Length: 154
Image (cartoon, rainbow, N blue to C red; front, side):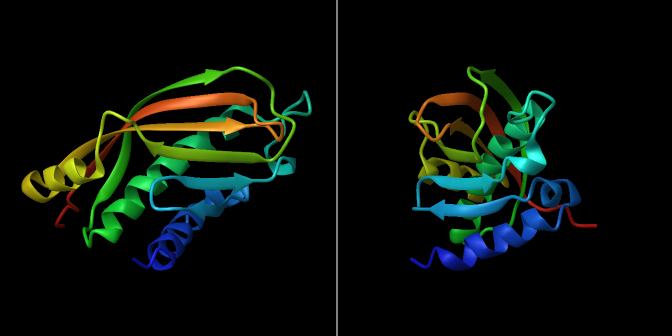
């Protein structure tokens, strides 16, 4: 399976959004199950010289969004992906680059998600994401529900 083509297109879609470009976000790694996005600290810094909470939330949300989008594209499906709801936890300040890792919640399966989308034109995925510091300590996490909808016909 060629993982480069879908991730390249997803990275282009991400960078087409001005707020995402401001984060200086880039796709770092995708192994078929987990996707990593990275953003430098400098453009995402707060008044305390650590990572801005809004940037942390954005990078985790975008990592989960990108993973759902890549999975749909790998399956040859066109969909609009939205975050439906999410819960964030901030545990420790981050003084390093923002590296978000996203994955599908363990009680879910991509096969079930894709089957639902094919049958109904919509599907929901429970996603998890986190950002750790350079020492591996989890600084923040996200639990979110993402929905994929068949594109609207205008």
